[in-house]
Amino acid sequence: MKKFFKISTNFYVLAGSFFLFWMIFIDSNNLVNQFKLSRKLHELEDRKAFFQERKAKIKEEREELMNNPELMEKFAREKYFMKKETEDLYVIVKK
Image (cartoon, rainbow, N blue to C red; front, side):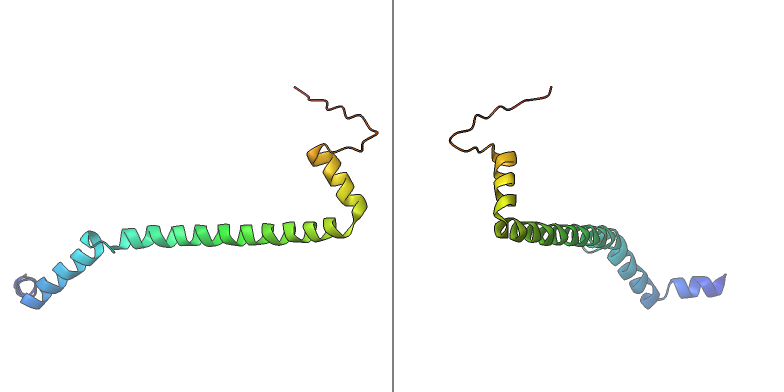
C-alpha cells in the first residue's frame, strides 16, 4: 500500500495522469469528438461514393440519350409531355 501511495504522489505520475485525463475528456479534440468525427467521415465517404456512382450512371444515360434520336423523342414525350403539332395530348392522373 505504501508503494502505491508513493507512486501516486509522484509529481510525474500526477502530471501525466492529469494530462491524460485532460486529453481524453476535456480537450476540444477529445476521444469522444474524434470518434464522432471519424464516424461522420466514413458516412460522408460512403455518400460520396454513392453520388459518384450515380453521377457516372446519369452521364452514361445522357450519352445514350443524346446519341439516339428515337430515345430522345421518347424521353421528351414521357418526361416533359411534349407533342407534335398534329397530335393531341391527354394526361391521365391517378389519384
